[in-house]
Length: 382
Ligand code: HEM
Image (cartoon, rainbow, N blue to C red):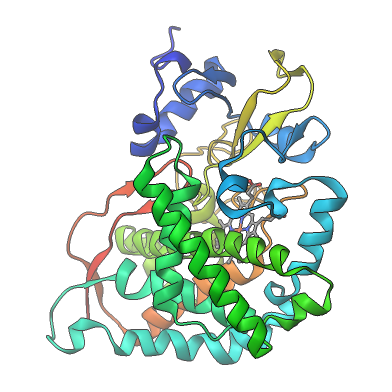
């Protein structure tokens, strides 16, 4: 059968609108495909994505060029092997259950409730609330600051997050984006210096990290640790509000929410790819990938690979097929995985507890390839 989409025809706009039909074609006809408009190879089948993520000896994170390194400075996601492990192991403690539980239990619910108390619908009952801006974005900023024990204003964090993200995705070297990123990076470094002077973030100093290592890795957290939980909260709310049976199951038994979160992350993964570079000439699924090639291991495609999942395009709470790859796999597996899941669960729980009736007022549009989520979620609450 002739493929409906060929790698040569794929462009970023097509992928950002809806990557899933493209992935399905690639999985069937060109599972390891060079896409000229992106200048990189897309890898879309589960086994091959795992192979790329689990073999830094073949596919390294320390890529050349690297927008991530140019923008943030060298950080754990631009390093491999022992240099990576030293940073990741030392930077992880604030985000794992053994240390972050008190923040999650005692801190976050009250912070999320405060945001709900400020919803504009309280001022005009029956009015609309846009959940991304009024809830998901602020709570993701607040949660990162709380986990780090950093007394920073979340509004500033949100501005820096947007600036840093503009720089990371500045593939076309747009001077305006570069300026936004430079300003955000400079302000972030000043804010981190001020925090260190106040004795905050001291755990990282005690673990022997230099000021520059702390700055560049917190910049990474300010990009990666905010967008994904924000999009995760919005995606789960979109699922609940568009699939009444799923909402009814959660209303009947709150424990079902954990399953809803996992299946949502499989079905629409907030992070699309893990980008690596071939260390040598390497054969992947029988395709020769030359040394130096940039390779995007498409996590979101693997999460819909029919070789791994039955009816992959269907959202189902009855799956018994095991773990997804939304948090990646291998040495760069997400550092904030535990906290991210807790944030999404708590955020949705607080909304469902506070409101019996939550209704969408406009259709929700999803967008994005590298980072995918709703553009806006407009609701009424009662
Ligand atoms: C809740 C939704 C989240 C999702 C879906 C997610 C997803 C991911 C993925 C797929 C990666 C691997 C990227 C790659 O290999 O190129 C990653 C890495 C990372 N994530 Fe998350 N993430 C989430 C939340 C968070 C949070 C809350 C933080 C808080 C700081 C965080 C911090 C990081 C860091 C620092 C890395 C790099 C780890 C390393 O290089 O070893 N993430 N995340």
